[in-house]
Image (cartoon, rainbow, N blue to C red; front, side):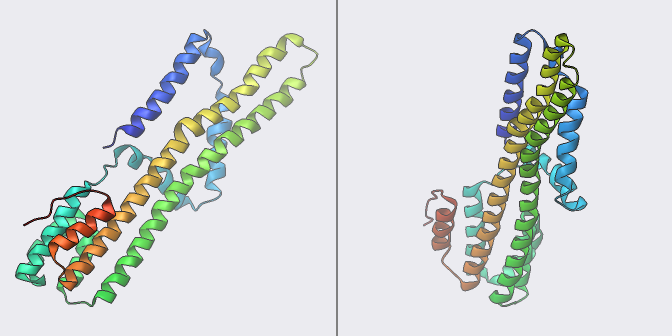
Length: 254
């Protein structure tokens, strides 16, 4: 688990709460109708732009933003290089005995190695893998889009709530003592929208985009490795090619 997202969001909310408490009137910042307008309205309007299945999947993908662990690039390079070395020494069929290990690491990698062992042409393997990568890209991209939409709509509904509050306040202009409290309540929804967007939805969307880009990169790394293994490329050459794509340095084996 990468703690960066949790730490960042937590610190942002703590600083906001501390500043409110230091102001001496935290109760003035609590308004249930404003919360309903911003949270409920923002999520409902976001749902309108997606299918119910995609929206639920997008919202629940928040767990990935907190629990996802980035792959180790150096370990990945060494792992794939070992496969290439094994094939060069023992042949493609030597991979069949460890097929479950490859599936446990990554289902796409397992599928490609299974097709390789079964004797399929590289063009077929590549077409199948590229189709799977495209589907994953679309799925993860939808998760990002849901949170980006929430990041856009929370402030928008905060403004809507403020306008509603101002209209209600203007109806009581004959009572000057109510103008100050009324204005404060009207502005709370804008505050809620800004906080939820900038301290929560946008950081989650950014993390999910990072996850998407990394996952797609590693899937393409696996495909590149399989192509090299099928051609019988030297493991050291494959190691260096993969390390360049992942931006890491690895020692060349003797």
